[in-house]
Length: 623
Image (cartoon, rainbow, N blue to C red; front, side, top):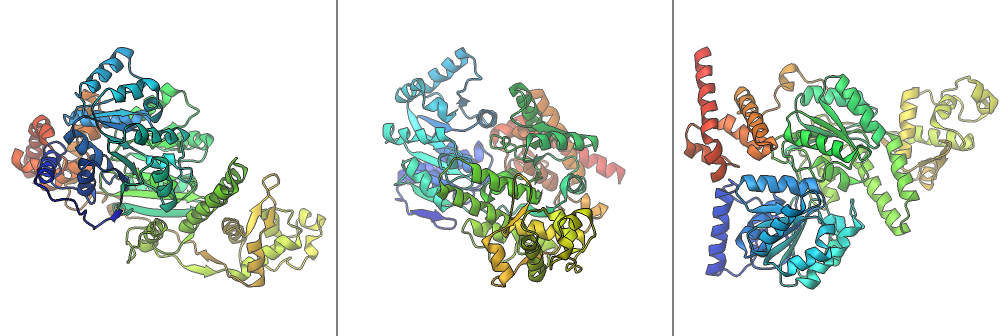
């Protein structure tokens, strides 16, 4: 059954299950520092504790990990977590150990003697959680180990990787059906942040979760502000966005190619931004070093291909920017979801070009896959282009794609803040398409614009295009607007670009527009208003003492460097914001802040309270 947000599980209300859930609530407070469960967490935890299977679709930052971590700590045996990337499992184990949880990972980076020690601990049930990649789990040695150890549950993270309809298919995930066949009595939970209905069906089929309870949380990330700058903003627009909203913040910039990654990172460094490049063309040790600097530091901007991100559990990423169009809405949602995992304010910003659309369509057409799969991928790309071009609330359009209704505009996207106008461009579109036809569909946009504007160029005269009926009929638009219109017609699928020569060709949709069977609208370009200096400095909530927050971040960074861990392992940004807003003066009041469990209170209370006292004295002295 599907239990969506707001519905309650109808579990047997036995004394034992009630006692177990009270124990779970105690661990939630004492270990993780949370006073209450997030939406759906309680139901999922209760289902796993009852020994039943689960498919959970929850947004990035929605608390998926806790859904299996708590049951693994409460059930007899070890919880096995299947994770796709080494970096992800290492970060999660590091954070769990900082909380006092018995966690470990098995992968090829560990010395043989350390692997043997972890296997011994697992056999003896001395671990709560053991992380490994699917390839490791499916090896004969590991399967034999699993048969010889007590098992609490299996958690399959990033479960969309099992589906060929998903956005990040990984064939090795298909072998995980062995868990249902060989360990049928052990409850399993599959988790993902992005899975449409087709992908969910495939996950259930491939992982044999036919009897699983399916939980679908809201896809809404209300703390993220969505903005799509459209075409042509490029690196200059990106720099303006960083300088005005996120100077000194950690962020991720996604590019389409390795070359664009390298060029963009170098350009940003030249403009004073602490930017690093990350892509598969770099040596493994260099990628690892840059990833560590990003996760362990403050204010580093990682410029990357999509090879970067899935394994990053950094909660204080304040922005994600795209310098090119992703492949589909699932990828866009997954990648933008890496911003603001701590629940604090974050931004998703994107610019793109017609070239991005053309490249993605070429990748789809040239892929060695069935035609049905290509058709679905084209439809997914079209849906993303529609999101980019919509004049409506971005969040409403994004959530509608995942089957979720947002009754009112969000008020937290660029279209809500600065509503664009939709211009009826049907007649100019007919002229533009007719010009393609009259000139023989052999030329690119630059020459076609010359014809429409009646320009007396050598090329126009050589081909006799000064005598076609579309010569000089485009006086209502300038050259820039005609080029933009051609780009939009390509994006809308009315024109197809010849990959070899760049010539524009008419599609069936083009004929429909020229006949007048359907119209053509286009977003009016609106330049965003520049933010005032006061607005640019107001990134923190109003009740947060910015100076105290800065002092707390400085202390956290020093502490993290001494321990050799990422700053967020000490405290998340959202926890520091709460401290800087509430300014607790006792251990008891500090313990009520979300994210501060008993272990962190024991280790850091004295230092944090001292910072608050010093700050208060400094403020009163200077007043």
